[in-house]
Image (cartoon, rainbow, N blue to C red; front, top):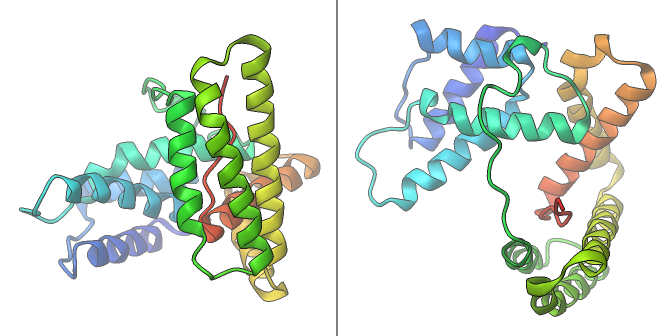
Length: 234
């Protein structure tokens, strides 16, 4: 596990870049707050994404009046961490905090979920990947677009069938993204996935650890390819 001082330093450096060079030191109570994230096993990549998410909302409000402070980003960071833990199948290191004592976020409606997924997939087609991958994404966009109207009124078996197809399509795109990686990039992402799981590994069976690393690798590949999560909760 990364030392708290180094963890805080990297968070400090990242926030400085987000604040266009304005450095806000992580000291005193804020150091204890950020160190607690490290103690819980929050991967740095998740913390950075939480900072990004807060900053996106902050910038959307108009011209900035003051630099973003890291403590303002905590709710986003811990929310993303909870989602990450559920995705990779690990328990919190400090079980006493439960789910950070926050209510579960409201889920998007299925039509809204499809709209966002289509927008994200459309942005993926940037020429950075092979022609075959771009064509696969194009087919997925067309399939999702065709599903938008039925999704508004889907109930019972029809809705269950649509959700099953979204999960299957998500896996198909993720497998295609895996195939786009060369050996060097794949190895680097796997090493990153193993580092994310390392703080939890001592409490896991070999099988559980292997499954968690695979899930963490999927998330990293998804982020690298810019793919949205197509699967949607019932």
